[in-house]
Image (cartoon, rainbow, N blue to C red; front, side):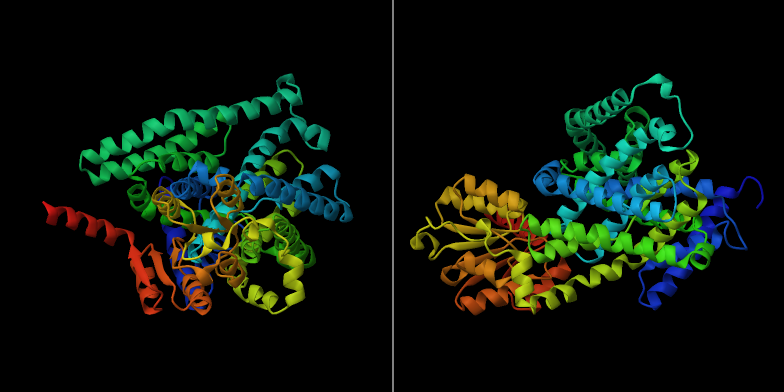
Length: 559
C-alpha cells in the first residue's frame, strides 16, 4: 500500500467489499451484516490478498459506534429507562453472573488459569447494543416496550463493563496476568473513583446538557443552514463521547448514548436523528467490517468443538436465564422471548475486554479468537433468532400446560382488583399503551371524568397508575386474556396508542370477537403503517403528521 493513502485505501476497500458481499448476502436472504463481516475477514491479516490498515479501520468503527449509540439515545428518555430499572438492573447483573460463571467453569475444564477463565467468561457475558438496536429496528420493535426493556438491560450491562475495564488492570497481577502498579491506589479507592466519575458525568449531562443541547440545536436551526445543523449534531455526538471517555472514564458508546438521550428533550431531536442517519449507516458498516478483520478463520478448523461450545454459551445460557427472569417478573411471554433473542449475541464490549485481557496477559490468542468466533457467528445468526420469536411463541401457545407454567396466571396486576364495581367497567374506554401518546389521552380522559381502563406491558407503569387510583392491567393486549381483563366486551371504545403496528390487526380482531360493536381508534407512526392498518379495516386510524396538518388547516380556516 502506498504511503499517505492508507486512509483512502482502507475506506475504499472496506466500502467496496462490504457493498458486494452485502448485496450477495441480501440476494441469499441473509442479513446484510453477514456480508460486512465477511468483507472484514477478506481484508484482514488472517487471509491472503489485500490487507488494509486495521488501526485506522477500528478508529472509524469507533465513530460508527458513537453515531449509532447517539442515534439510539435520541429515541430514548431517562424516564423510559428509569421506569424499567426494577427489571433491567437485576436482570443484567444476573445475566452477567450466569455467563461469567459458565465461561469460567468451561475454561477450568479446558485447564486454563482461573484469571483467564474469569475474563473469558466476562467477554461472553455482554451483548452488543449496536447489534441489538439494528435487530430491533429491522423487526419494528425499537420503540416498543419490549425494545425498551431489552435496550435498558444492555445499557446496564454496558455500565457494568465500564467498571470492569477500570478494575481489571489493578487486579491483573492477582488474577495471574501482568501486574500494574496502579500508583499504589487501593482497589476500593479505584472503584469509588470510578463510581464518582460516572455519577459526575450523569449529573453534568442532566444539569448542563438538558439546557445547553436543546438551546444549541434551536439556535443553529434558526440560522436556516442544513449543513450547520448536521455539523452541530455530529460535533455534539463525537465531542461528548470523546470528552466523557477522556475526563470521566466512560466508554465512547455509553457517552454517546447519554448525549443522545439528553438531546432527546429537544423538540428538534427527530430532525437530528434524520440528519445524522446517512453517516450512522455508513460508519456502522465500517464497525462490522472492523470486527471481521480481527477474526482468524483457522480457529474454525483447529478448534471446531470449542467454537460450538462458546456459541452455545452465548446463545443458550444467558438468554435462557434472561427468559426465566423476565417471566419471574411476570412479564408476557413475547417480552421474555424478545429479551432472550436480543441477548443471544456478543459484540463491541467483548472485543474491548478481550483486547485488554490480551494486553494484560490474561487471555491467550486462542481465547481471543474464540471470543471473536463466538461474536462473528452469533451476530450473524441474531436476525434469524429474532425471526424465530413468533414461531416459538405460537408453538408454546399450543401447549396449554406449558403456558400455564410459564406465564403464572395468579398475577395480581393481570386483572382488575375485586373492589372495582361492574358499573365502572361498562361503557368505558380501553386504552392500550400508556406512553407519551397514551398518557396524554389518559390525562385528558381523567380531566373530563371519562371512565377508562389501561392495558400496558410495562408493569412499573401499571403499578404507578394503580397507586393513582387509575384502573390498569398488565400484559400484552394481543393476548385475549388481557383484553378480557380490561372488560373490552362491555367497553364502548378501544384506543390503541402503541408505536408498533404489527400486532394491532390481531388486537382489533380479538376485541371485535369479544365485542362486535366496539369502536376502534388506532395510532399510526408512518405512511406504511397507515396503509397497513387501513387495508386491515382496523378502524379509524390517526397519523401524527396528518393530524398536525389538519389542526393547522382548521386554525387557518377559522382565521
